[in-house]
Image (cartoon, rainbow, N blue to C red; front, side, top):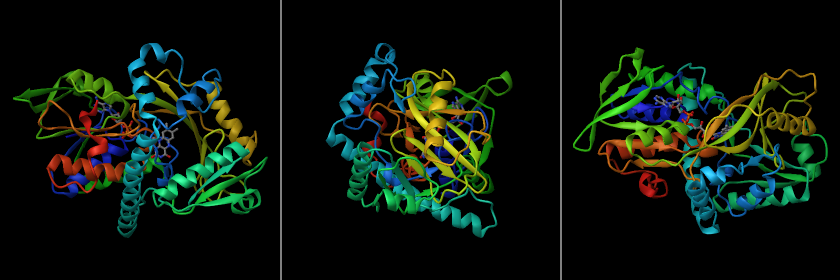
Length: 416
Ligand SMILES: Cc1cc2nc3c(=O)[nH]c(=O)nc-3n(C[C@H](O)[C@H](O)[C@H](O)COP(=O)(O)OP(=O)(O)OC[C@H]3O[C@@H](n4cnc5c(N)ncnc54)[C@H](O)[C@@H]3O)c2cc1C
């Protein structure tokens, strides 16, 4: 049983049926209606870094009094989540950041290859697919400080074998004629791709069902029956009558919910929410040629055929406390400043999602201590979409006991 039909669970379930397993994919709601619903849709190995980067804590402290800042650690968390924040601060060393970046880039590069192959397979079978497009990724900077940060990203990406080029202001405008306002320069990564995030979940689930997998929606996992350290049955809330499903192995791919769920079973998964927002706008005129990161405000803009997605901000939260209109307005204002997005352009209401954030910025992909047949696959922070197929390879290898193609060490579940 794979619990959680977000992008991570959907790909794990698909990989397991591809390998000939009988699999049930369970979700408390509809597939893809958690954090995977409205993300920016980026598959960008050039941005595969753990959140606790050297200096990020200082940056967050600087921003903590600005309610519209792109990164926010509310001061109240220092009281309620002190151990998590301490771990976060301790993880932000150059050595750990570099090792984490290496592992996440490899996972993202593998995933990008797997997405491309999957997109071709679906196209060959006449399936509508999930909007896989390789148009690269552009970072646009307004200030010299921003451009220095972009050059640092370029340097880090090059160390991992990801191609990119620095652009001066004129080259940036030539590369993306839709950009306006003050521009200092930018960086272009030509090999990056983007997709439609909800369609990506639906495509994986569709293929899973086509290959014989069983999907159960609107059914919440509530507990396990165990015998001699192994889970024998999963309990759910189906139709108020507690249902029991006999299981051979359980994979928890429940995003930010994994913390609470794990706690109920005695499994440690210290995951906080990294709240972010997105809105859909009409296609811009002139149309964007590739997704753009407005570096200083950390706003992600993704073009589709008829629409544009505008996404941003990361606010650490222990619980979902809804939409902050001020932060949403800050994202929209940044997009209007840099792009031809008129005041009159209709925007959809803001969607918000909680990125599942671990204190060391690395996902948890591994066998859960204390259980013979429980695997965790959660905590993918800002990278869950772009690392889902690679995560699925590793998770399937761990479930089946086959030699992992991905080094499991950086992702072990027993590190907390
Ligand atoms: C604004 C924003 C932009 C982003 N942009 C990108 C991007 O461009 N690229 C990228 O790679 N990532 C991006 N991310 C991050 C990405 O969205 C997440 O990392 C990813 O969606 C996490 O996927 P998941 O499958 O782990 O979790 P989720 O999608 O949250 O899925 C978890 C599922 O578990 C189910 N569930 C929970 N509890 C139970 C239970 N008890 N029983 C049954 N089911 C349960 C939920 O219903 C849900 O469907 C972005 C995030 C945000 C907020």
